[in-house]
Length: 274
Length: 268
Image 1 (cartoon, rainbow over the protein chains, first blue to last red):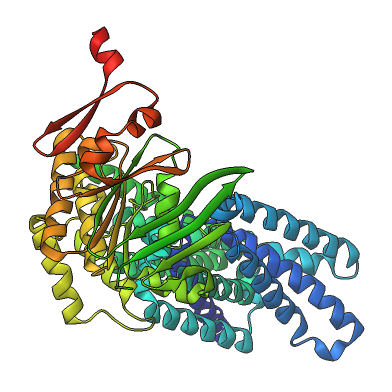
Image 2: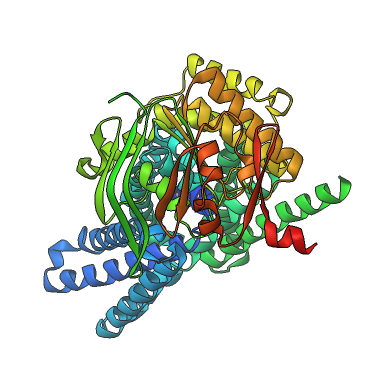
């Protein structure tokens, strides 16, 4: 196998691990829509960032990615500012509004950018084969930051997972930790966007974590299982796409959905046995 | 002012153009056991939320242990809540998550530990101590979601007490529980009061849930304090009849007060 494919596999494994880990908290806090919402913000940012590249080609290396990160962080911060108890705005409604806004901006950007429309549309689906060494290092660095964040704030994240209102009522600095988590979430989704795509990333965040919650009986095992399921989704999806000559992103999504289906079946059988 | 003391003056909370809380003055000294009663919509929950800085009043001053809550930064308000064991009336607990009883009780310690620190052996000693004291030893390793409503409520009381709070605020802690569990939970709260001397604010629309240790009653009606005093004087006053808008007879059974609608009683 070409050494490039090893790089692709490594990038896929790291992306799968970090999105799987993110999913533990996103699914646990019941805000799975946040994945697609922030990833669309990243897409919009990347597209508008690429406009600067047309104006100044020397910015090719940084502008699209930086635009994606800035837009997703702004989206994450605006989502963190939603306080259902104060604003009469449910978190999911807030997510839907930000999502619609970002979707509108994304397609407006694609419409304005006639020259590379297919490339822009590629951000919706992503392509793991577009990865390179620098991109893989960036993804790995952000995955490490996420792992460190989860380890450092593990106890606060646990209370947030259990109940955000309990966390707020008992002085866990819930707003600070939640805001920090969303910002990190935005950056990770933005750096993984070219690989997994704005639409696909929703699946790889949700399915591995949801599968882990089906079969695990302790928080720690949920974290480990979701990370492994995320990696497996990326690995099996990539291998399947390579040998069957199918789109990589679609294969990864189907594998992650398959893992969830197996976990749900296991839970069903376990419940029947009880 | 002593630790755990609460002081409200000229507090008004307005929502949707309507005043839902209007408290001229309320002082809660340290070590008091105060029952807050009233009909639905009387402002009981809002009063509790104002006291623990979860709801900011439109007017007035709220002081907790001598600190004016309005002057505190969000970070400082959050720190202040570490000293309040608050059990909300309705909370969306994520019961799908596999947290064990010990983990949920340990969340009480999490809130008092600084960010970026881990729970120590001493923290877990406190956690295990409260698990035992509330008779949850046998359930320690079970998941929270597998417990009955009464057992879950016990775990939440243990979680609040593991915070070693200066004030314990309970908002309808016996809602949706059968009479036996209601009795058990209020017995536990009373025992905690005698054993620890913690200041307790207990909100209940059901007066029979106020244990004999509850020496002071605050009766709310349409957001205002209609009566505030010892249990005998409040239950003997006309205020109760005004609040419930009917002729009332009160019964004392083992130190617990039951309210009976006289019209219904004579009708049957």
